[in-house]
Amino acid sequence: LSPTGTQTTQIRLEPLWTPAVLWDRVTLTCQGSGAAGDTNWYKDGQHWGQKKSDRVVTESGTSQCERPGTGLSPTVCVLNEELVLQVLAHELLPGDTVTLHCWG
Image (cartoon, rainbow, N blue to C red; front, side, top):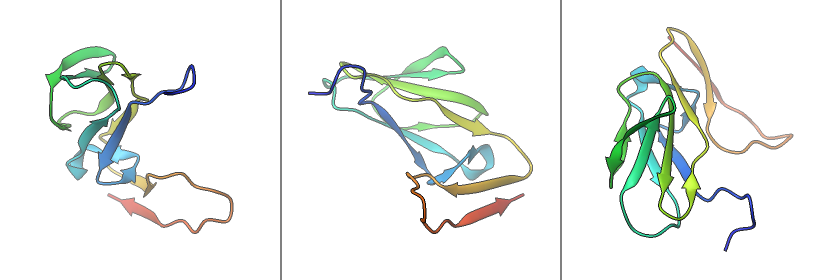
């Protein structure tokens, strides 16, 4: 059981760099502990479709997913920029060593 107000649905990015960029061939995977069933996908706030599998991003914008019983995931933004400074997508704490990628 999750505490009230806690989101248990998450989106995993592949590759693991953030911000995600369109030319990186981004794949989104929806993860949640809800009941089995199709995952609802949302793109720029609009229903994007229902699938049981991962979602390959082919356009820039924001994405969310929803698993039955666990609610909406946080929003993930995929950019279509010519120059991007990226960091590995994981929680950072003070004192952590950070590797940055500058892509263009």
